[in-house]
Length: 406
Image 1 (tube, rainbow, N blue to C red):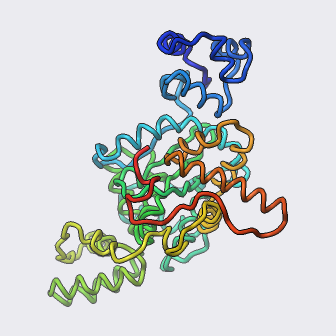
Image 2 (cartoon, rainbow, N blue to C red):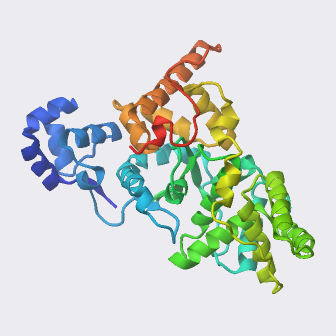
């Protein structure tokens, strides 16, 4: 597929903005011949140049770029959910998806040449369980072993997937499971909101993995598969079988729920994830499911007792951007920040690039770029220095500037 600039849209935008081609080329820092080469499709601007061009012409990426054939990147979000709460997030993600293109080449060396090719996803209980166990084997975890965040993060490279840690505050399910799939490289970029609690982060990591595996399924089947897969991965049947026997003997709703909450604390999972996993087991084995009312807001009330993942990693004190970059990269073993740092080092508009790719505010994007620069300075000096740059304070969801919609 060939990607070119939309010369018709460019011409119309030039008329509306009152710019001529010579003035546009001068503001971009290129020659008129280079601009003509872009318009004619003989060359294509670098990501920073593309960003500047869009800002000068007041054109979004989707109008500025013309792609023949299938688009190189595709937005992926969970099936069966309402999107109205996240429409702005999806719009910005669609515009920034093309900017991830150059990162694919930088990320490739850190990923397997080929993605794990498990059997086709199937919502059937036993088939889904087989997939969950196969993915556990990639990190050498037995079928009944408890998984933590690091174990889950290590599964992503096997599917040629890369985690993008972000601080988005409170947002909907669609944003929490937002993915961008790059067709040429077969990579999937998965946004992970660290303003969720550790329990929620584990759930979303598992659902991200399921969403990648479900890409060939129809919408309804995909939604069923992703939910069931995440529960089987996080709470295997051996646990469900043992707990089911214990709970079925007790008909008291309160006692059952209290026991499930104990298990939630033990496994670092939302209570209803465990409840539904147990009933998945019961239905699959044609035995009576537990009669536990699914009270609305149970998980939300439970999660409010805990700090966000970002606060758990960095504490209550103010955290410098370099610490966030380093901590997120190490805890999720993601090569994203290293590849983004390399791309920022060779482009003229790194702040805009970071802002669109990570979907954060300009101030937070500046902090990330400064964090890259300070990290390079410490490496060159060969000694540790105190972290600097704009400090990003872990706050409750929705309070951080990055949590507001771009």
